[in-house]
Image 1: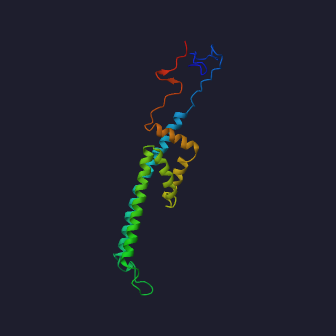
Image 2 (image 1 turned 45 degrees about the vertical axis):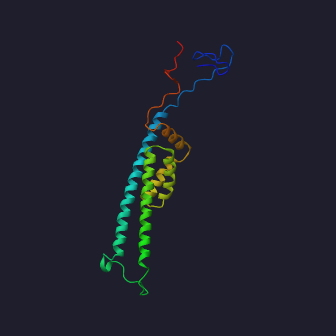
Image 3 (image 1 turned 180 degrees about the horizontal axis):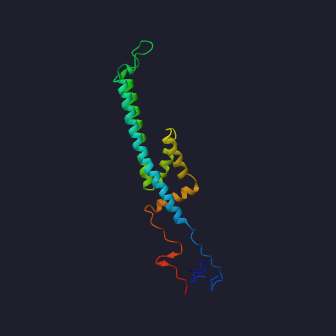
Amino acid sequence: MYCSGCGQALILGQPACPQCGRPVAPVVPPVPGMQFELENYAGKVRALSIVWFVFAGLSMLSGFIGLGFVHAIFLNHFGNWGHGGWPNGDDGPPAWLGQLIFHAVWVAVLMRTVLALLVGWGLHERSQWGRILAIVASFLSLLKFPFGTALGIWTLVSLMGYRNATLYEQLSWNPQGVPLPSPQAGPSGPIPSGR
């Protein structure tokens, strides 16, 4: 330790600098349990990223099933159980309109799946863009009841707020979960006690 006023070397535990008389700032002990809280939060973010990957897979699967069902109805694979004529005896909308809607829905399913995969990857890597993208995607997934709504609420609760933002920022600086050195440790280990 050195005096902040004159640069004189100080012995740990001295109340004031012997040269200039400036009081020595007390050493702030590390926050108890902070490493435990970081590890706990890292586990929550890891679980959240896994659930986003699962949500991406379920989105793709439900898209395949739903679009396959709609395609089968439009091609009249269900016989009389499909669709009949239009009420006014008209042939209905042109065939190209159905194909356009089918492709637009398919693109929307793919975009939702890619977004969920990106969110899962960003949270897995603990990057800042992953957190922001997860918050945006969680607002969008609130509309997909019930699983998307639950996932959106869990994501917002886990990532928003000052405390969670601070914990996530510390995780993004330390992505592998390596224990951070204590503030009392110098470059070559703990500060000597002066004995």
